[in-house]
Image (cartoon, rainbow, N blue to C red; front, side):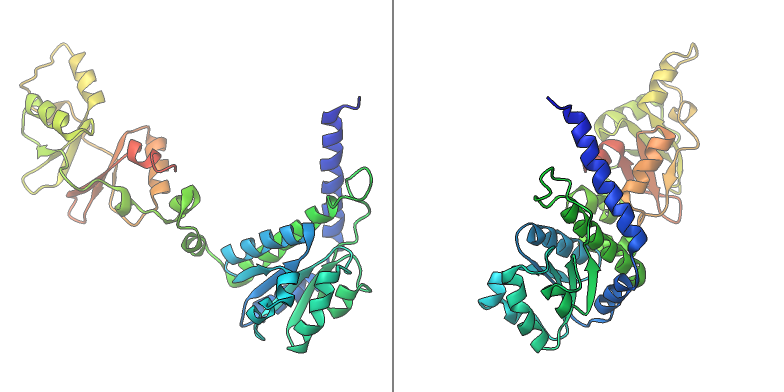
Length: 320
């Protein structure tokens, strides 16, 4: 019985080796393909059959999420009405390893009839798809990773990687930024990392704010009712002067001079960590909390008055 670990390693190495070989072979066709998409006024329509179709659907999704409007059409559906979804301003990305997939080849003359540019992905320029293509990304692999050299393995990996290369080239060309990416990914943990801001998460109601001259006993009562494990001490102008945490309270209890009637500010942290930029991404504020090993960040206005509190539990519960 062959060692499955060794077989798996050989597959990965073989496919990786082919990607490196293809990277060294890339020429002007990739530049031509990128410019065809970049200069198009419409969308990128991706099409393909079988495994190529599955890879094509992923490429369309990647393009769409990185600033290039795109969607997938199955060639058979295109022959039965979906060709109407393709506009003269669009570019078609057609995928077929052999370049001879019957369902795909049949729609190519109809696409060209409307003057629509075609970017092909196939193993030969001499194939039917190659002849119809205005730019051809070559899939001339040495062999499939499949031991029978039949199942699409290395070829589909290369196709997917070339689709990623197209998407990244277009991102660079469009100067696609993190903020743009956030606009396309508002949901899920990824969207929260790129979209949710401090102002969307911070607590603003019923903040445990007390005067900086109150006793520790009064501060403990405010801490209990505030349910944040902290109280904010402010002066007569409502400016933040200190934060008393439950950690500060525990350390105070260990002091021989502890006096519950002493002013709370005696035991409080006089230089608490604060924020004034409520437009900061929530994920960046969480990094600060982790860096300083604290539980909360106090959000201040321009007058150094507390307007909100960020608690580590609220941030972590978002899945950040």
